[in-house]
Length: 364
Image 1: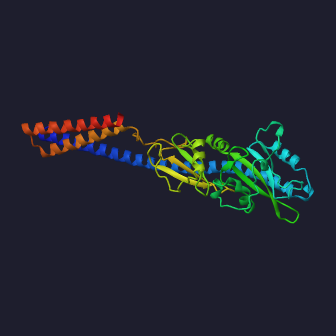
Image 2 (image 1 turned 180 degrees about the vertical axis):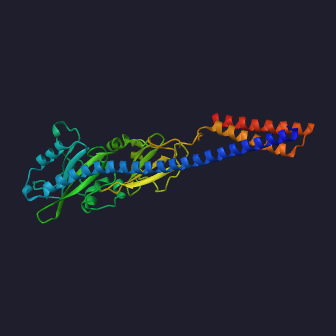
Image 3 (image 1 turned 120 degrees about the horizontal axis):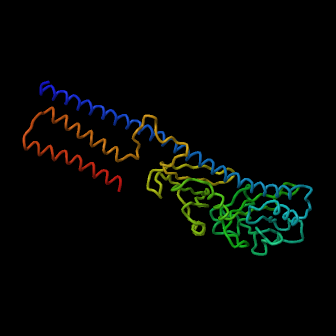
């Protein structure tokens, strides 16, 4: 076999190897991109489903508490309970349930069926012997003026007039002097025989209790969520303690409703999903890193050999392809000289050097 034929076969083999490696790299790149797209889709679906599941869980718990107040109010509104033993009925509902910070009832002036001008008995959580206290012994809840829900934070004593003129609802968090703490209060109206409002049943939950209900729900590491009402007040935030939340509430500090597209913990792109909490004016916001995947996600496709984590392999493959391409180019030119050999040596060395630097950057 002549020298020229040997060179031709060598060149053919070199070009074929280079083409095969390029095809291999292209196929692996296409599979890698397809896997990436599938993971992104799975991550987005998981984030949305998790948001819905958490919102449903919160809604269920809050609806149970609201139902307690509604049942209590309906009991006091029935004809059989006119008159009735308000204290005994209050104790009955208190002993049946235990999730609230307090449960009580407040009547309009001279509308309680007692000889008292104001009457607002309540029982706080874990009260010894289910001891009944009086809200009206702490302050005059019968404030004549109604305030907006946002103003209620600064004027908590006005809660009764504000709630009485509205439908059953969860009020914004405010400082309850009788409990010496911030509460989220649900109110349900009491009616007399003429269907006129004569009072309110109220159920309170603490911000600590709300945090406990949310924190056990798994949203995976480096993700976070927050729950805020229609006034933009945070009721819960994964990145804030209850003390910080209370401080923001006391300052009437509202959070804007901007969409977070970056996870503030990781600095990476994130999914931002929102879901309303039924029967409240609350909205749940979740920020989930786009790299968060459900446990059932398939990491690789059947033909995929190189993954996005095989950075050293990808760099080695690119260096090898670059060297083969340059070798093909040099063999096609067939120009040799001492100077050219030194240039070729420098070029080959630079390929290896760049590859080593890339590997060092990726690994360290």
